[in-house]
Length: 489
Ligand code: ADP
Ligand code: LRH
Image 1 (tube, rainbow, N blue to C red):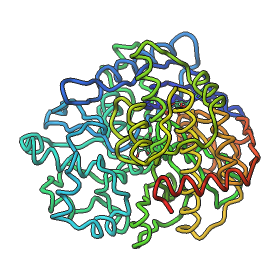
Image 2 (cartoon, rainbow, N blue to C red):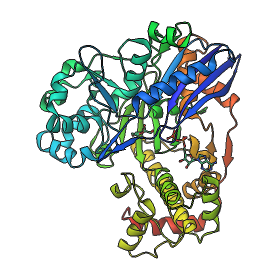
Image 3 (cartoon, rainbow, N blue to C red):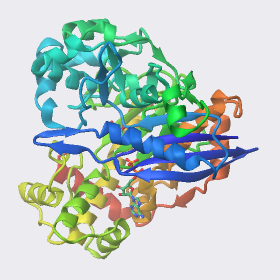
């Protein structure tokens, strides 16, 4: 049987068909489309109607060529949302989380709600763009929107609603709002009240694997398709990626390596205490009663923005070309802290990396190769730093690191990561989010028994490449330098 996964990442949106034949999943890419935010003046927004249009193009491409899927699931990045009026229409074009409207808002919220209280209630890391701060910003700048709003839906909920006409808030994504309380398993009334965000907008959450409804008549008529069922999957893309980690062991470390790098481990209960807050770890909801104890690392976004900047300047380079240039540049010449907030907004990233180098009295990288080398080595070092913190917080010792996501196409980064952590990296699959999305649909329809069977099948279906650590003393010494230059030690 087959299922369709819509996976909307920052580097692209894709419709992927997953075919399960006994114990093998085969994946066919049906449609890939840009998912670039649209800038209007200072605003940075989702092109949500275009994305919906592209999803319909994906459905149309199935016709005649493939067996129709028995179900559909949608995942995207976290935190972003749409507000609907009483008639079920969108009140505003959803903001992209890299919009600057939340600048300074988290600090303002802390005056009303101490961070300790927010963390105790939610277990979620402090990121300036979390939904809670996006809503607080709207409450201050556009209060009429929240007065008019009848329903809050996160982006996959919203796209699912466009397709089915049914509204439901999915659990994994709901936790990333920093408004969901895992102790009470419900939206946190106190946080909502304190910020004057109307509670009726939020409905009880549904778990991954819940059947929501079929394609609505307007869609089946327009596309000439039958009413294919939609399931809520692990709709936060990182939650789907974690479902797809082909681990055999119950206690494993993962790095979901795409636009962001998300590193952590899967746990049964959220880890909520002072040290977890101090280290700004998060406990995002996972599929099947799990939590994702992890930390956000700025990731390949920095490289993507360098690529974009150079492209604008007439120097277009593919990712493999950039990696090649980095390999030829001198090692360990300069480090950045990838998680410095200066790297969060879109913009001229080469300039920012140079500024960071100058500010920290390091030799300023002069060309593309040196810049890319600096970014990739710094990411590898940050992975070691966060892996050690994950071990500390979970009380676990990991034998190696599972890497999933498009970043594993960067084999040099995989190797440098193994070198930095001094342990093997097991890389695969690259389309982790789409495959995790499919896995939940297969489980929901009884084709796979549970998440562990799904992981075993994923391991058999997609190659996992092992990178053994090399040059241990050199990387150990360089890690010390990284620590000094970035203030992490
Ligand atoms: P997202 O899901 O966030 O859109 P992906 O998982 O698709 O991201 O990963 C995209 C990233 O993977 C790119 O930013 C790029 O750095 C990396 N990548 C993809 N293909 C290659 C390649 N051939 N060589 C090196 N890096 C690559
Ligand atoms: C990765 C991701 C991450 C979130 C960020 C907004 O795509 O979903 O888990 O923190 O985007």
